[in-house]
Image (cartoon, rainbow, N blue to C red; front, side, top):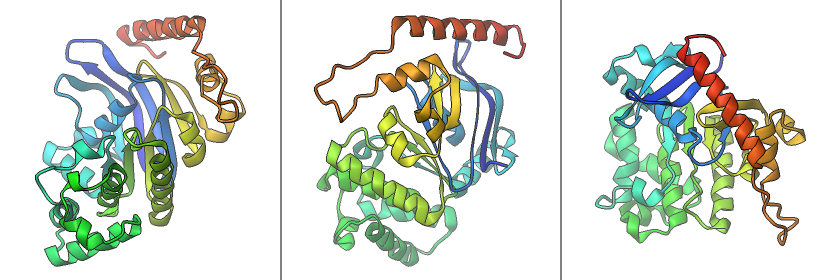
Length: 292
């Protein structure tokens, strides 16, 4: 059984249209699954549904989210927070806004250990120093006392990675963790996340729109369009030949470093029209209560 199993998950705006359409996927213990698709496809929404932090205007209207076989939807809000806090962590997209600007870095790492695992503060601080060293931050003692604005973007992201691994979670959701960084730092952070994931044996649900990143970090991937899974496969199979027309178009639209002067290839209008027809037919089936 997958550590995380999502079954027919549907998220809707309250009294509105679906944002996720019967999404099903699994993340095995210790593996990396990528969620890919255009902006607005629903990638981050899946992570928010798992973490229980959906926007107030959205709600889960159908489906199950199983963590080690336990349906999170059946738990009380308090029990769910405790369960998620002990087992799952998040590496958010923007390190500047994710860190509290009015607090020093150290407590923002140690609070997770103290509040969730019940560590004593001195032990938590010692562990935080170890983690900062593990993510290759020099002078970790100085960084512990620094405020976020005193650190570079790359260092702030390293702090968030250290914080995510602090409580030894079994699953980390990385929500486009390199988007706000320059290309050189992106490469360093991706390598670091992969090193930490392998060292700790943590499952990783990696949200990205960059297929180049997928090829370097993931074993499996799920392609989304308008909140619907259009392809779910192994990474090797995907790059050998996607099965869905939209996936093939998405792969063809990826810039090639071997052809820096080449023009970008947009997803053809015909493919967009075809997948939109699929979505419309899917919505009709959902409304009628049938199986697509």
